[in-house]
Length: 93
Image (tube, rainbow, N blue to C red; front, side):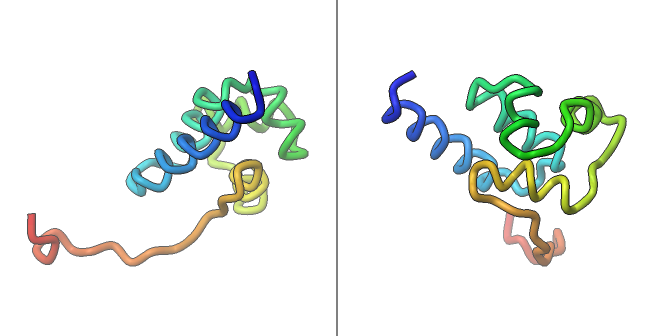
């Protein structure tokens, strides 16, 4: 894949994750991996974690530590954060 296409795909993957704060971290990892066309082994190598760790998170056997999730998300320049949830009665739906 040409570099310009890789950058476009990466930007799209980041925007998708940011547009879905309701996703669990594992969902975000699965989406990033699929969108960027990475295998678990490739993502693990980039993030400097074990492939088994990536697979366990993806398959719901582990939630991963904050450090591990930040390594995985850090591949695309993201990290875990804390945000205030707006109560349903204040959303203006």
